[in-house]
View 1 (spheres, one colour):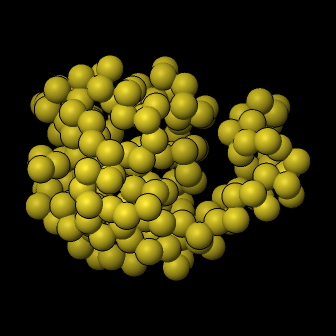
View 2 (cartoon, rainbow, N blue to C red):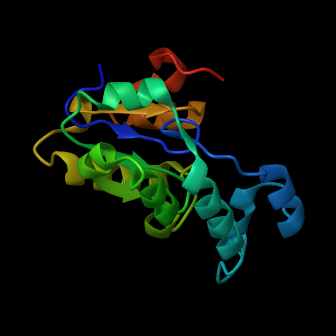
Length: 169
């Protein structure tokens, strides 16, 4: 269903992070975590990184997605989250970690994934890492947000909402 080398989102798709996002927004004094991108220097991202790293240590896998990834040769992760938190989560599951070819997150993106140009750059990096001989039309992207599914479709990929794989909200 996901093909040889899908690209998946992280929080809400691959893993269920237990982060108190509302509390974090209050602590940081922002309406949205992504508002931190507008700050020069980006020094307050460290607070978000710490919360995500702690959550990744005990995050529950989204079982239907993990199950479908079992048939894939490789996969990549494209996320707004901290890359280290994704790797921390993956390291808890040897078979999964061994097939992860790329994690493209906040550090690599250098901007919000909600921006089409940023998403497209990250998507291209994931495709190159998993199967450079393929084109976007050969890619399945799995996510939990409408914007990312739309962006992946605009890039030529087949998009699946995590709920289509049997995940629960």
